[in-house]
Length: 109
Length: 116
Image 1 (cartoon, rainbow over the protein chains, first blue to last red):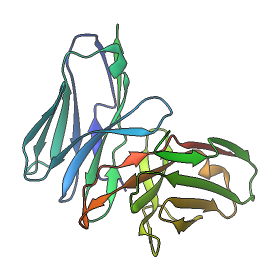
Image 2: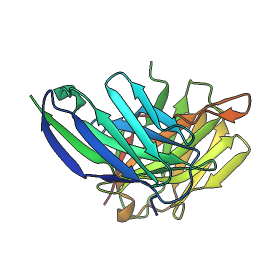
Image 3: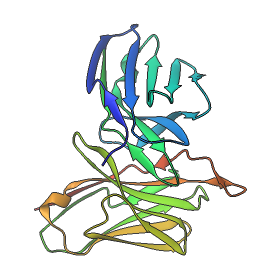
Image 4: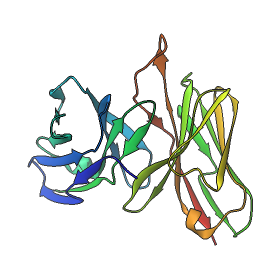
């Protein structure tokens, strides 16, 4: 069974708005990663946050991690039409990765 | 050139046929993975390999087998394909530094497999 679950399953916003998606997981982790997938293509790594970190930034991306609640959030600021994609969280435990079912983000121009 | 390549990119086959999907990487990574993706279910791990002599089952290995022919090559086989193996299949790699995994995975473009 999958460990990470994203919420919401789908999100539609206007260009320039911020997009927030959440990930919940079940067991202890070494780190949590976020990936982006454009339709039908391979996943691309966006950002990794370690279990001892609480927040991390990369360009327009901001990731938070709350290990007490077993949850993470990905914020994309000032969204662009090119951000339209599916976003997945992946939890890394002992040598294994578990991907959630993803959030499908649509950014309207 | 792509760092992780998969062949074929698309394949349509019939129930009962044996199918092999191939993955090659030029990243020099020792760790390789096979996943399948079904609509609404995210990615599920089929098999993974940490080096040529190390093969491990993932979440959904039944009906699949793998071969790590070299550090750069990892093949997935469906011995007798069935319709519910219709899915998008991804190969991925990750590396280590001084034996410590840095976990980021690099994905191939995927193989779309249809079993009729």
